[in-house]
Image 1 (cartoon, rainbow, N blue to C red):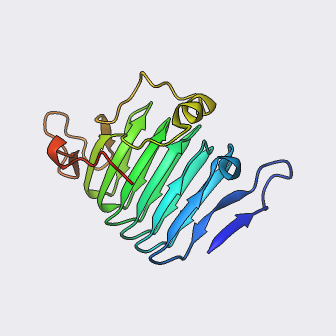
Image 2 (cartoon, rainbow, N blue to C red):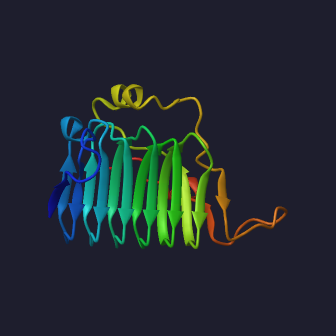
Length: 178
């Protein structure tokens, strides 16, 4: 189900996104995403393409989904997801209660994981026509990518790697998404 939410601030752009779909191909384009907040919730076995520059992205309670997202102006929050592949470019990435998922990211700050297990990271590798313009619209710095610098709030031991996350080996990374 596609939805738009006009609640909140009177001058704010409404939320947009998808909820409750199963086994679907879902897509939003540049005009629909323009600096809006996007919510994906309760999706099962879906493939989502968000081509454009949104403001924020919230992915909640999704299972077995692939989310391909153009550059975000601010943050991405992934909460309660499992067995997902998330391709995200953002200033800040926070993952909570997420299991057995893979992240392909361009992130300006350090990614944060909390209450996560079996998550892995690789550099952002999605490309589509207009991607460079979307990076400019989001004001993300292409030269700063901390894809492999992750803070695990459940692992505070400095001299040992966290057992909750790792890097996707190069030979296992996806480079072609279509």
